[in-house]
Image (cartoon, rainbow, N blue to C red; front, side):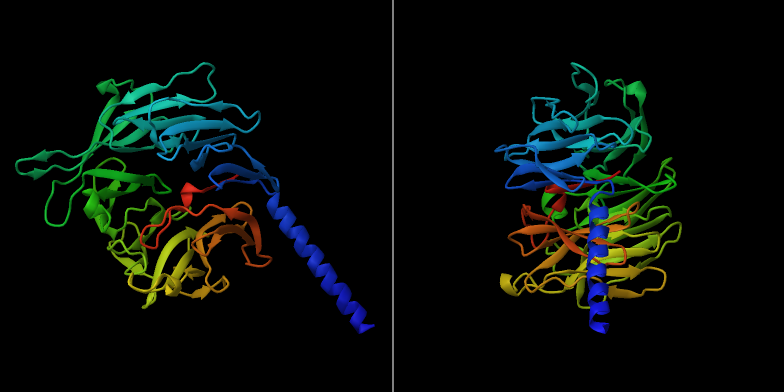
Length: 412
């Protein structure tokens, strides 16, 4: 009798676990991914192929999850938009387009072509792209979707490099300088600081601070860039630390003015990469990476807890088959309590964690460097499951991968 009861309990547990995972798959999370260079989506637990034979990279969801933007071609130069409800495809510009970003409030996409910023309204019939501003090195949408923060590129003078200039530009500027406001001039070249352009602008939760990277020359930026902060009104500037040119490696907490980032110069990701947290307006930073380890991609679970991809430290001279692969760790930044939450099989690693706040789910990528799968688990890390098989592995750069080139997640 006891064996029967035990068997019933086991079967019931398996059934409830499967129900939980099914519910997770249908909880309003949309995912776009690249498989064999083709664009796929998974919505409501069902996979669908959207393109065939066009070499797709860089999928990005619109703010409402109704459109996808992506780059076509091996040169990643053609921007195309796809509408989910009817499969409509739109090419905003037949010229080369780069650095495309959706508005946070509307289905309007911005992009750069030949140093100029343009916008395109995906919902407008027979629309053409509109000119916004020339002389753009990089940019970001303001959170209200009504204007842009634009960085110019620096200039070389006989006395050295100037610093990049930051401008506030209205969405309807149409190249009109009267709709552009100078916000801040980054310092000129001095000592170990050079800002040819400012990149990766991100606003603090209260929108009073903006974090970004001051990017020097191409060869220099491969090893080190300066993480900076500027007040939204341009009244204060602060250099925070040195890090690689990876805008996913610095992120604000969900609702507090706390900035987490991966500190460390040197292009080799296996060396000198540490998770740090800076709470404003305090000046000091706290480090959470133990000695002998390196931290990479991370996500905020809440205002106190961070989930990070962590591996043992090693040199680039280590043979490929012996290089350590990462697991996911959960870190409480208030108590410094840390513990490992995933244990990938031998010769596989866990990368690119994404925490879905509304559905309390954790998504990550498990890869052996040659192939990759998407995994899913609940916040208690139970019922973890391989969710999507066989997505492309992006190009490798000194043990670092830009997973955003092959995956984009949208929580409804």
